[in-house]
Image 1 (cartoon, rainbow, N blue to C red):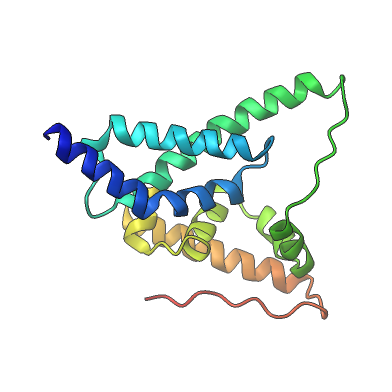
Image 2: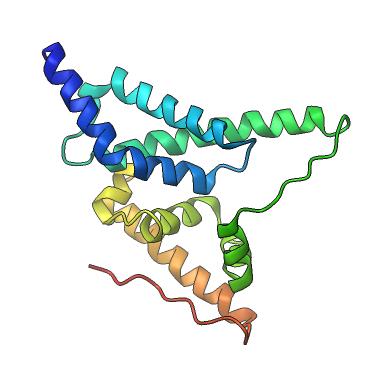
Length: 179
């Protein structure tokens, strides 16, 4: 791909999907400060630049979410190691984000935390990022059928968890409609 076309495609990729990937990272990263999320986003975009020819034209956002998911996993591992080392030196007092407080108020956060990681990721990519079945499969690196099964199990399990301890003060949780 000629250099000008490559640069133009990358700039379009950043314009069209950069904000969505940033929101994805910000919602999921529980590390240091906002600059950590910015660093993760920069890593995702650097990988996209290096592997621009590998980014499928019909699934750019899911491909970027998949890269972001793997970068988050690496960042969480680093953060866990860092926390283990730093714990004896200073107590860590983290204040919850507004979104976390809202989820906790609804009881959804606790229910989501009880889901297996793979099912939680499938559910949140669908509900929060608005990915369809094909996009979800691309982001998770699985077949469309496997993604649909994982999402179905996640929904069923989440509804079962929420039904175990219904909280009268919480409104019912709506599930997204299937296309």
